[in-house]
Image (cartoon, rainbow, N blue to C red):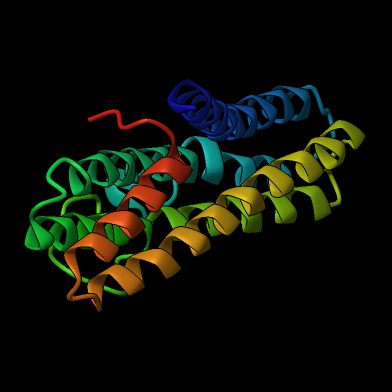
Length: 196
């Protein structure tokens, strides 16, 4: 049974990695396809894709929203593992759960590891700018088609994040070590095997 559980976690982890990689590949394909457009107006869609892939003015170090979301997701994954590394220590479970929360959405908690931007905000930015790119007058049919896939994958990431945030809010209000450990384990399992 443990092997099956571990296998399921690997599948879940693999799907999440695949979603992030799919977003990256689809954006790259759309970027290249758009680059072939000869329209004089080609800069609108191109600019929005650039915000996702290359850089955006309000992200840390002006990184693209995709790279920002990946960096925050890495912090979240690390702290999910740290939260369950000592299930006999309620303070540690709560501390690393706060760190995980901060990586997902720093508006809920300040002063924790991560970029301070939040995976959620970066993924919402991906959705917004891919939609703007697809709605641009100069958007190619290929860009419009790939935008649907990118938005779907991004929304899947947001759904997972929302579920994790609900569990984390619960953990932070708990005084029962066993229950907090079980909830932290659920969050970690939803992310896949610990990579810490």
